[in-house]
Image (cartoon, rainbow, N blue to C red; front, side, top):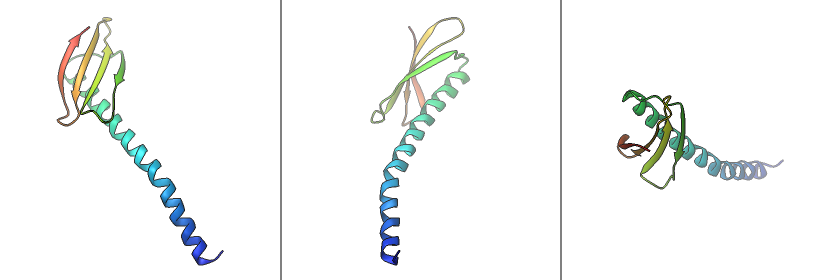
Length: 91
């Protein structure tokens, strides 16, 4: 292959992989918010048996729900910008 084709191939490969890298990086950042929320809940003395999350990446908050070992359901609102829990409600 000529040198020009190799350079074009490398550029095309870079352009194709960048959107995938960006998407993976955004998903990892959103997962880090969930992990931080769980850590904060555990530090407050709650136990998490089962959990689920309602999250939109464009929102500045994370709505997180969990069940403890006493079968009580809780809903948590977590602020992504400040990395702190805004409210915990028993449902």
